[in-house]
Image (cartoon, protein in one colour):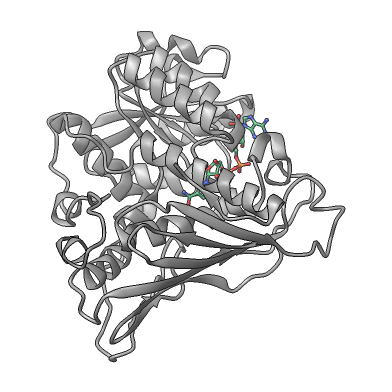
Length: 361
Ligand code: NDP
């Protein structure tokens, strides 16, 4: 950042703390109890298993609208009946001292509902990305958690992923010179046409909200600030029935105050779109694939290694939040960051709609 400031660009505070803060979570006296809300694919296949490997967290409660899942999770994880809730009873979390943190893993358009209930129950909240489907709802979440005197973190797992942190280090140390351009893309062919990800009310949009956000986050991480303007083009829909409610694919550019631009793509149509590349004065470096749960590979044009250890990104993310709560230190993946990214995505949609460059104040 000092280098960017010296080059005449406005100084923007770094968005992340150094790696050392998060690589070795401090064991707390008592692991923090997590209540998982919404027992879908991510909660079942990633979060619950990750909670078994965390240093500072434990699975203490569940909130589900599906009684059969409650039975299964109770048997599998030994959750007592008093710690099993549905969406209408979850305000009773207020009376459960076993729960410190509520992890919201419901569809995007329900994050505000569940976060605000958790905050009113006096709990810290870790909410999955994207934070919500509008900046107004994100603001309501920030306000509710603040009013409760608790912390709100967004599930930006790549902020804790060692390959991404190594890419950030190469950029910050200018090992290949000043970064001038970034290219990032994340997409996958979506299946079931009836799923909530294709419904605007629950998803807020299409692939941009779901996975394009990783490209935005990667660019923000490398540059160390938020974009100030965007342009965007929505590509022609090849399946206007399936994608009646949301975009199918989108190309967009993020413009940063220091002159760096990030050219990004996202899609629900094609696979193999999973990369981030930084173009610097003396070479290029990047991650391909970049955004998977594991198997991330780094590379540099000077043939030096861009390597890092493999971690469970969800365990690392949860341990970091527990660390922040225990140390009374603000999380680096704040609600304000989540809100800013939702504003950026809304600006991208506006740019695609109008064909204009949209400034983000
Ligand atoms: P799923 O559809 O698999 O699960 C969502 C769960 O939310 C459902 O199983 C259900 O659980 C609950 N739910 C409550 N109301 C509804 C509703 N009206 N419609 C559908 N489900 C409902 O989604 P995912 O697990 O894939 O995604 C959940 C969240 O996690 C999203 O915000 C997504 O963006 C995010 N995510 C983040 C990832 C990451 O890498 N950080 C990866 C994947 C997803 P129940 O039956 O228990 O009530």
